[in-house]
Length: 437
Image 1 (cartoon, rainbow, N blue to C red):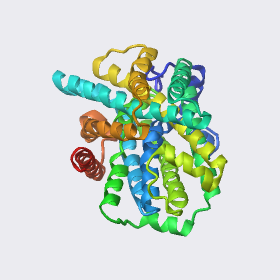
Image 2 (image 1 turned 90 degrees about the horizontal axis):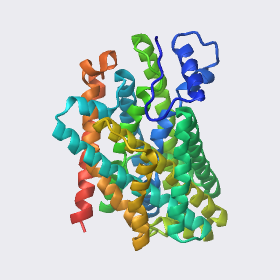
Image 3 (image 1 turned 90 degrees about the vertical axis):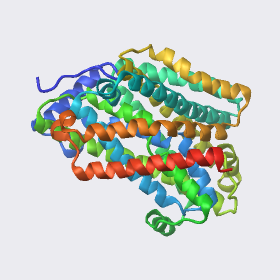
Image 4 (image 1 turned 45 degrees about the horizontal axis):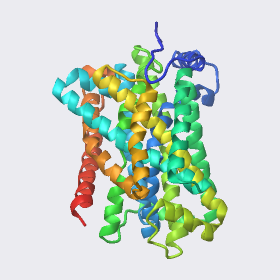
């Protein structure tokens, strides 16, 4: 059979069968549909991965950068988005070419002690990531409905359990729900941008001209760039592709990679635009008003009302809620993939969800400052980046692993440079956090 659906991150549902059939027609050259309809069966996985690039951690760093330095660091978002695009393309290609996800390949090619160490670190990183995402949604509920943060956390738990329950109906429904949530976040920031009326000429200039203004701007730029790659979605994206549309036909494999490349470009471009809109909102609202000390999400919410009206604050809170809910759902999915891949074992997803939300509920209960906790969780995440990024590049450059889809030399060189830069920046951020005062 040229195509065979497999069960990976989600079960196969009725919508999945239609998607696989439509994709098979396109890849075999039998489809008579228009360009957009031919593309649709291949869209979705990159949008799930892309959620990680617009999570509450991005809210915190982008708002701080925009409030402190205006549009100056907009080019950093553009550059970081291009790096993320390359890394997610490699992750997707790995799953397509091998029929295995990154965690499984690490298990099969590395020594057992290394595999166990990588699994433990990946789980810690997944929990730290989920902490930030869960807290972000809870904070959004608190700001929008004026309820205690603990009640916001309980609401977040209930809604994420409901979203994760959709997995039983197949990957296509989950992709549709997550993509819709990404669309809501994008719409919220489109509305914010409309309310602000920013200077587009100045924005275009700073989007392409690299500039700094003192040591603090370099540190913030490092924060934006250092958070470019999220380790858990490198593992997840390869898993989403490994059994979604399966073919061993070399010609069809290459066509499948081309279609997934479009999926990644669209999803990452949308994520990049949302991140840019976050910074633009902070720059045109806070920096322009001389409020360059707005450093937390709560301060941003409260400051928006007198400057742009209550509607702007509501839209901001809604985008934060949807960002947190979608990203914490994706984080739980990634945790499942990590455990299954490294250990060939799994636990029910509701148990994993219960375990990973406990640290967030503990943080809320003891009263730690949410935005500060978000920043610290990003530091923990930094430790896991080399252990996802380096194996990804090593595997995708090996012809015995990738076959005809092996990286070109230039691709490997570029990916190595990106990995080196990201790892160096994360080490710099870790040093600054603990020793830089």
